[in-house]
Length: 227
Image 1 (cartoon, one colour):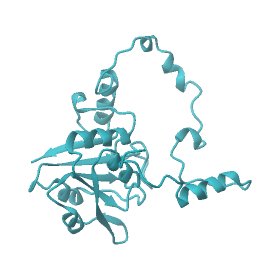
Image 2 (cartoon, one colour; image 1 turned 135 degrees about the vertical axis):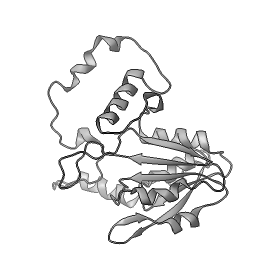
Image 3 (cartoon, rainbow, N blue to C red; image 1 turned 135 degrees about the horizontal axis):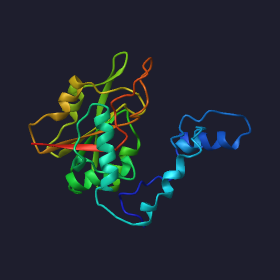
């Protein structure tokens, strides 16, 4: 028997079933659910993998926060885009999902603590929180020509067991971005000790109509401790 943290319903949902049926059909289709860049038809430079042949790769040097050289490169990339981040403040994980589960373990007790999550947003949050014994408490986004964070919705979702607020910018699936004004409700200092975790994605993708990349990060999630 699996633990109660595992979803009771393991059958594919309607979207997964529809995607599987389309893949099995002979007609061409465009799969908008694809998130694997190696399966998206990109043409990569022929010499892209040469860096993997570096002799330094022969030596295994594990680091709990990621290789120092890699973290230094991340900090340098931020600096290139005008953002000052010390390499000691950079933590590398295999995925944002791993970053989230580490944050849940760090911030939450598996006995009723809650994490505020946006709705609509990334559906995997429900599974990630359940697997760590944490309750996902949704706060509703509002649509006014574009999806926006609603301070009243966040207040309504707040409780004495709230330990973190998850914010995704650009949001999945709405594509909305969090403005500096909208982020202020996420850093409230009253009540229990609370952190906010902001996931940013697509660092090098230019905004529509602009040749400059966004100031977002592909480095996973970051957490700011508030009291």
